[in-house]
Image 1 (cartoon, rainbow, N blue to C red):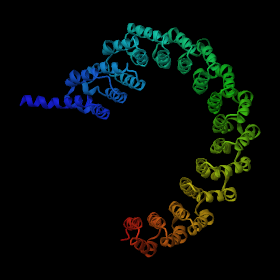
Image 2 (image 1 turned 180 degrees about the vertical axis):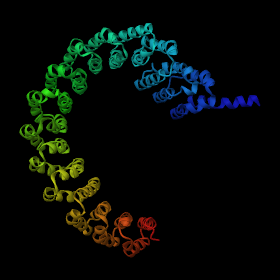
Image 3 (image 1 turned 135 degrees about the vertical axis):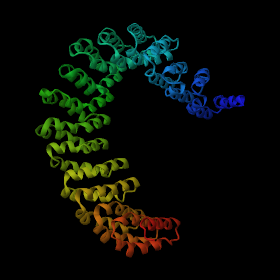
Image 4 (image 1 turned 135 degrees about the horizontal axis):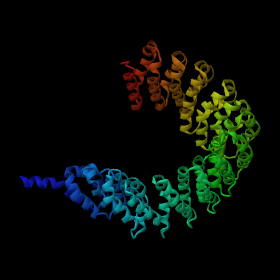
Length: 589
């Protein structure tokens, strides 16, 4: 009996081994994904003594199997017996951290970082740190790149002797012969700096930062920029000017556009890290240069930051700096040759009005908005229209409305349906800002035209738009302006337009209320129940189900019930199905 029990307990591992050796990748993958179940069946001791060694020995597989394994092992601590035995997970993860495929290595490093937290300080020094050192001095660049991601998690919890060793290893990796290793070190420099004591940040990290920021490879230099922002946030104000700024100034004028792009992309974080004085003296000229950069990608990244940069300028000199230094660059960007630059600017420029106030907005920004509203690219016009609320708060919409109209009309009729869709989504916002008279006079007909667009997504959005407009302007407005036009479409020769009537009634019934729905909409729906097209008839059944709760009970019994009963005997299966469903939902049976 004891022997039989033993055989039984071996069964899961036998299945796993079979499946892991199977030629079918999918089977191997499924087996790896069931690892925790198998580990549970084996118990903690056999997981440690049999399963983990087996997994460590079989690490030569398809990347997706290895990726799944690296991920599973990150949450295996409980299955090996808790934190006391967590170091047993290190051998398989160490092997995974050296494989060729980057995503597998990254996942192994992520799992190692996770389980490092579960090591006691003693275990960290006995088991984890030696692993980091082995990886850091490995023959293959793959293991050395993985090591870079592990220094930051073990440094804070080890003795000062071990800390010194870790710093030395990190320094060595920063000057590694292989660019991939320097790139990995550069990407982790900021994280490592955050856990170091301030003195070592100055003595160790700053020289490394300076060296990496002038590396021959631009991919290393651009990652050093990101580290520079983190380091700047750690240093006292008086050290910034000497230790970090020369390197960052150099990065902002780097010969590689990718490095300058990184500076532009991280600009607001940098501004926050260095404080108001350095921003005024150093960052304002650097930002001007980035806005005028010869590469469109850099100008786009900088244009995206215009509003945030201006908002964070020191209050006492904000307006002067913007008017003197930033606005002239912005004026040039409005007529940039690249559409992405103009589009990026259009998405933030409206935000300047709240910073600069009414007079400056009217005098300086308004002419720029008007130029962008006439831009040849729909996205530029859309971005301006979608941010109107900022300007509305400062100067009121009237100033813009005359120029807005042509831009809105053009976007509403754009050949690209996604552009039409985007403008529909802004319509309720616009309507609220322009007011009901302006809307009725200028935009109402557009909203109705969308209901018969040839693209279904547009018709659907237009229906939703009507509902939001009624919520804004009220049921009485709907009864006078919208409902008659919608109901008029019920007689259209195109059955798709007749169906749109039903979709609109579905959407409007709730916001228009019982009286309008019963008196004006219901008769039209009931009349459509005899439509020649089955699609229209089954949508009548669905519509009656939707508006039923809004109607009063006498209308339900006297008018809706007979029509649904008739539709329930329709020859078309779908019509029958939806009619019966409506009868049961409305409890008319």
